[in-house]
Length: 251
Image (cartoon, rainbow, N blue to C red; front, side, top):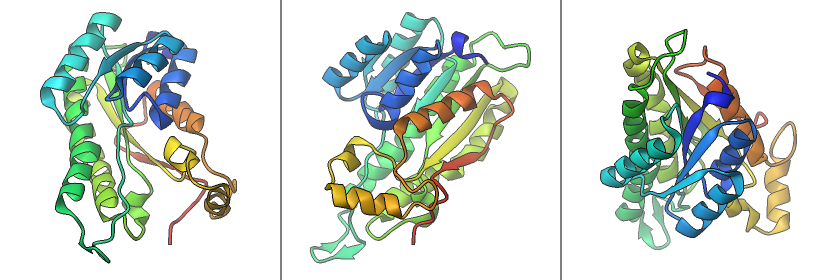
């Protein structure tokens, strides 16, 4: 797969890792359709990069189906899907206000895990219609996990569970889709300078950065986007999770 012939859908593309990925891929010559719940910001980013936008709820089957149809109508086909949509709560299993609210746990699983699978399966169905490349390739799915899948912190039971599920489905999905020529990869980022972290006090940001062994800084979302681009073009990468975290291991 070449970037110049890539037609990608990116969930959560209106901000953070998704936006950085959308910007990087279009800079490299790819077509991009952003899928996001934020209609205003999503349309703005799509306009700035010369891409397309579909307001999408990743947990809703009909919403994602409509978004895929829109993407195909604009780009002609889908060859890559990058799942960056996600939410995070900081709630202990039992805290001062009582047990972890079940609806918060459910919502985290719904968006981060079920939403990723929903998008992946529907994108794969579109990719399966593509004419194969010379090596049989029809497309690639890139999901986003987190180092919390391995090193979850206090208050991350829901988030770590959802991202652990994303890690766990990577290999079986790759095996499921192998005969169709569709690869499945997962990126597990460490602490990145996303809008959520940018809102923290400067001293907190510095402390988080100091915990990263090397380089001792927060990740740049563009680095995530560059890794996604590398995965798209590197056709022998399949069924694996790549950590991008500066060797950080949470304690």
